[in-house]
Image (cartoon, rainbow, N blue to C red):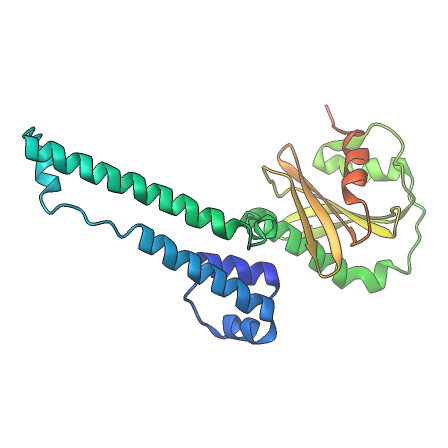
Length: 241
């Protein structure tokens, strides 16, 4: 189990202890610290929300009693509720600085696309590293046509490999080209996303960019300026009208 999957599962249920979770905890002190932080946050929030509610509160709301006693109780409960909200905000504020929220809060759909892209790159690297097809811009646009997109200018990088591939439940344009630091892999897939996500995984960096009802994914090594490459490509990428 990788770090992203471990954190996602801990945040969804910090008390689960299946074999994968136990193995991840045994393999990494960082995972243990992360779990402790999440459990502490869970406990502090639970404690902050432990506010006594008057037993007859429901009756007061239903029957709208307006006696002096009711008013006093309502004011007291409101103060407790405000204190509870302040406590929760304070606890969350304390924890925010201790947890890597940037990686943790990647939505599942985007995390799945990133994981698939990285695994695809790792699986095909021994094969595509040996190729140099010297792909032209015309060939690139021909491969992109089924996805209803094209580059409006010459592709600005040397392309070693170009093809279609299976990508999750969809297909994708699969391209390998020369970046500034090393080779970069591009996927244009029919699997849609709605937000931009940057990721770092297994010594690689990448980005998932929403393109209409499709996704553009770039994966390079950890030293590659993926953001700059993405901007260069997005500036010349256009839907086919």
